[in-house]
Length: 366
Image 1 (tube, helix red, strand yellow):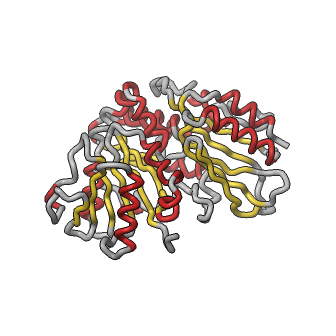
Image 2 (cartoon, rainbow, N blue to C red):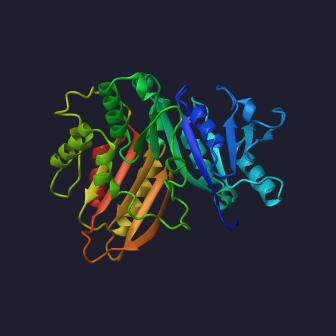
Image 3 (cartoon, helix red, strand yellow):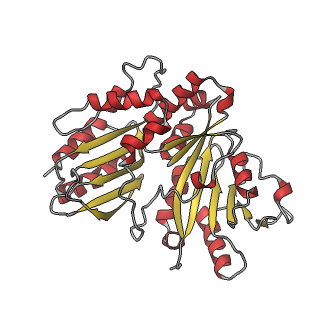
């Protein structure tokens, strides 16, 4: 096993959303990092040749700033394995990987590569999926292409590009829409690829590798950190959301988001999210059985799910998250005496049976 794992960032977004612009900027910046870029070769323009040193007929190209670039002509796992081997042999030097998917790609299978293949899982750490959404065409693309909804649903961070081409109402509507689909992704505006490196790397959006320390507060920020970041309308929507809670067990119904905010267009997206909360502890065995069944039946429709769990008889927080049928969980920090214990779970997926899942989770409470 590698002593230190190589972090990987997946860059996704529909055709023309600005992925190549962002990537060029990252590669040209003086940050001292050695980055290996893996590109899907069909469809979009390749990274401009002026930043490449060698003949682009080769599969792996050395760049002038010490980065390397390779084009996938086959299986991603094979290419990653090849890169890792060349790094071990001292033939290539890089300290992180960026995978730029083609604009028509569903990022799900790309993410799954990091959990299905043991060799890859030992060498590489999937850090985050970053999705770019074009402010000018985003709403229409979300209406017309389910793959764009999937790209949004999988994101750990959303970059809205080309915001200068739309008015504030259009921008607010798009923000509200993507947050409704994926409340766990932070949203940033990026003009002409000018994102701070800190907004792109080491985000720790994915922690499925049980051997890694897990950030126990990743869901805590959903309640307050978003306010400074998002438009005023979303802060209202948050309050409204809590007001529509079923006080029995604090489970919120996200459908309440839409009412009373007439300035936001109603979009009937297939991909939606919902949050489950409970102050009562889970029975560990019942919960494990129930989640196992849900993943078996609805795994393909579950894009991302994540949660901090309060378990009966466990003095620590249990953190779990997953992609499709692949779920990882781990013990995190101890519950502090001053903390209010409780579970919070976020599910993002395609036409998920929200009532069935929330009723099932209620039945798992101790």
